[in-house]
Image 1 (cartoon, rainbow, N blue to C red):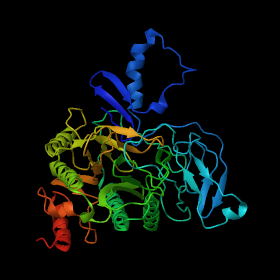
Image 2: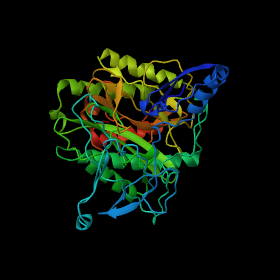
Image 3: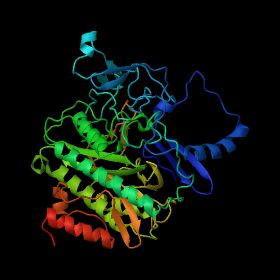
Length: 470
């Protein structure tokens, strides 16, 4: 069973793989060029096609039609007026800009009206890809976006393999139960990347307040990551245009930062991944705009239930357990609370590759995802909804919202399995903000940092600082 964090899902990968569901309507064949496959070839194709798709990495939208590229530098940004694919560029940011999210179907660049305007301090804004008849589920609408930000190439920052052309070069193992075991030196690098991601997420969270735009949060994230010697992993990953994901209210995941100002009472998930010295650290957290007094009772219950089911799943992790059993823990908890869990997106293995095996499904399942073992690193990141858990994909090919416009919440850690349990490589530190769901949780006292001896020792020190717990 392969569930991409983006948009592909294989169903029933038993000894024979039976079918594939493709979530992306943009990938439908062109009616003018469709060919009918001879019946004699169908049986072979039905086996080979799922195996090929199974190598698709998570977080993977389809590729768009492209043309040649011209570059303009305006107010500290690089603007691509036309688009290219699979072409290395000598200048940073290492961004290949396919038309995904910026195509001619309603999208484009708001160009300056005169040469003098191009020299002003006002950045050029990009209109996201939209369609006139698209029916949004809730109140959130796409705003204008600033172009991709630079990562300087005159530093010691290591760039991921997709930074130039948007295409990850390393694929996960074909079978989902084949999982990489990290060596001690790799684990130490992942600790550094995880600490970087935690510090950046904390900075982003402190900036959340009424009136700030998610694009400004993206700027803070980008600059904080670069200043720590890291590359913001989402930037140009399959041509994603920003350095983090900001998912507000009904947005389940992969929200693109833009010029929409946050409003009091909004809930926002900020998803941070930092690539440092060749390894990724990935984490996300919820924030309430205006503080806990600004949220209604249902929203408060949604955040608390999401956090509690997540912690229950984290506590289950130890060598020898089945990855597939994580999902039932999450679904059973939120269902009793009257909420639903998203089935179309999943957690994932992580390391030198952004998304790889194992696939962490956040609902009850019997899929062969393998067994937990010492040295495995992966994420658990349940997406819980107050209403329907099905998703609606925006025309930008990234933003996934609930179908009914109900709110969604999510938390995420990068985890390391140890001999005596599990540790959060992106765990909170003494300077991290304390959230009400950590303070009020009946599942766990204070912040959660792990079940191993080392994790518990760090957890006690952090909670002593944040909560006065002993």
